[in-house]
Amino acid sequence: MLSKSPNSVFVGNKPVMSYVLAVITLFSSGVEEVTLKARGRAISTAVDVAEITKRRFMGNLNVSKATIGTEDVVLREGGKRPVSTIEITLTTKGETKESAP
Amino acid sequence: MLSKSPNSVFVGNKPVMSYVLAVITLFSSGVEEVTLKARGRAISTAVDVAEITKRRFMGNLNVSKATIGTEDVVLREGGKRPVSTIEITLTTKGETKESAP
Image (cartoon, rainbow over all chains, first blue to last red; front, side, top):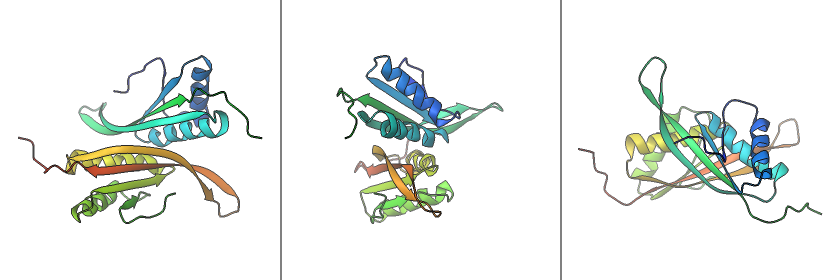
């Protein structure tokens, strides 16, 4: 489920701004859609990344959909534990970014 | 934004299961739609509530949409700080719940 595609950013425990930078870099390279993926406690961080990117850096960003789900994580001591996941799809609306007056 | 409607559950810092119980109680009372609302770190918990309710208790639950956003929180020491929010809409598909064979 949470596999790495070229246009996806897997959000973990690094500072929020490092993921924001990753998203901006991807859009700057010409892609039109970036998917944020996270699980467990990092879900809150993924939402922060989407919102901060939109509010502070890319006013034209569109959070088209957020999908939640469950995934099994294999434990080091054996066995599995279900963990919640989120995927947030970010797209540019295709408009030129304009600064507010 | 995060106002309390009769069919909404505001997810905070209590144990996950207390919110799961609140959701099940609402559906048992006859409502067909319950909205989970959370902000900040509680966003991960809200996703857990939706997923646990579906997996363990209500197989017919439909997580129709998750919407993310930003809200200003007024600080005690004055000023405001933006905080991320999520709203997850849960609906029953209208089918009778059947146990797996």
